[in-house]
Image (tube, rainbow, N blue to C red; front, side, top):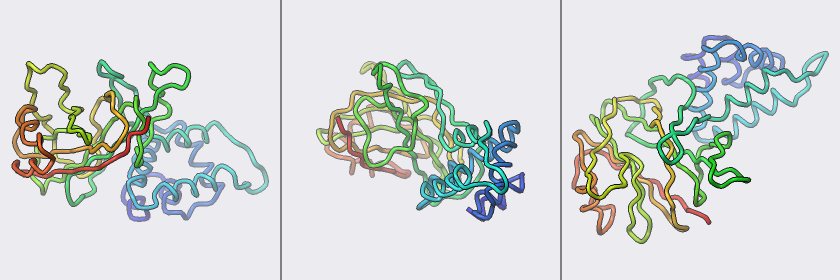
Amino acid sequence: MTGLAAVFARHPDLGAHFSGQSSTRADRRLFRHIKSCDTCRQEYRTLAMLEALEVNGAERARVRMGRALFEPAPKRVFVSMGLVTACACLALVFSLGRKHDGEFTMRGRVHDIEAPAPSLAIYRVPRDRNNAAVPAVAETQRAGNVIHAGESLAFTYTNPSSVGASYVMVFARDVAGRVYWFWPAWDDAATDPQSLQIPASASPVELTEAVRHELPPGPLTIVGLFTPKPLHVHEVEAVIANGLDGLQAFPGHVWTETLEVSP
């Protein structure tokens, strides 16, 4: 994270924190500062999000926060409300929408960091333990290899300008060939919505809603279809009727990730 911190950090303690060169006292000073500074709080969230996309990024974050929260500071030890803010910054917090769960917004400004090809990042929104009808917004987290039936999914995308893609579709296909649409929304067979128009961006951009489908247990392949021209749901479903290889008929870039849906 040294390079990222040097480019984006506006506060010296912020750069030192993400480069791994800060002290416990400096980290605690930073957390007090970002409690009242919107700019640095947004920078922190952005850098934490970008770090989460890197190899071993989550482990680096755990080590860094462990030092800041639990190592004794010189002379005196105290936990301020700033530490609560700092912990919150590590999570991508969403407020939900659409008719399923509603609109969500990822906090923090994004910056241009070139990526080799368009891609998606998947976030899972669990259900409340005491009321399965309610999403547990505070527990939103980056999806790993397993998601749970009943959870909502949210997405960010990167779309480097060099690829020339201006539209995206996001959907999933299970092993039985059933297709679940996230973007565009589609729940009426009489309609035929088209791809979502998107700008070029080499840094993550959030899609503004979390969506819940009744997903059966088993393997599920998430697909991001990035194309230079818009496509329609019916034409995409027609070419993938016998498998996702049919997507090669369209110009653009196909991103996929297979997850396991557990009961």
